[in-house]
Image 1 (cartoon, rainbow, N blue to C red):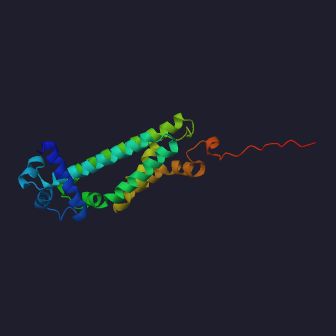
Image 2: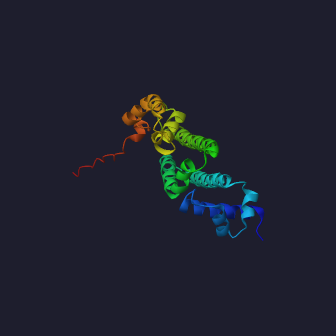
Image 3: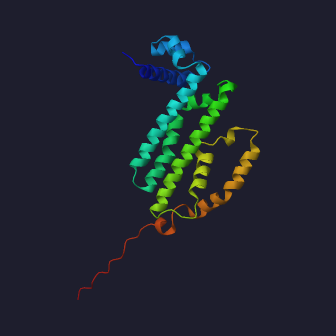
Length: 215
């Protein structure tokens, strides 16, 4: 017998599958109920509206992603491997869930957009914190340049390369310019010197072994 938690998960799984396949506008609560093999009224018992169900689906996928990302980062021992996990897994997640993510910002009714915006900012801050932790880990290992501010670096990477949205808002020129003004010094420093200390960034060379002359 399915418990309330099982039914809720079944509804979310069915909703995510259909929303990814057809998008928000073309997916109805009736179709989700049929896919989950439950009554439509049961969906409304757990989720008051289609919009609430949609936001819950976004939250479900986000938590799944953060659990996967955190596990991978914690399992990696080297700084380089932790950083690689952080940069590669979000890209994979975005491509796997692109329809759901795109619909979240384009098709949901305006009344619910504020809720999505709050969630997006929350997820951005969690990404900032994760990357800052990785940078601080590198500093403790003695391989990261202490001059680099971990929090500033994390915000810049997330804004420009992972979770930023400044390029798809045409009337947002001033915000983009302000970000450039804030980040250009750090960008130049990274291009010139990188994030690793110079002594750790140099490739290791084999020591020459002096061969004894045979007399």
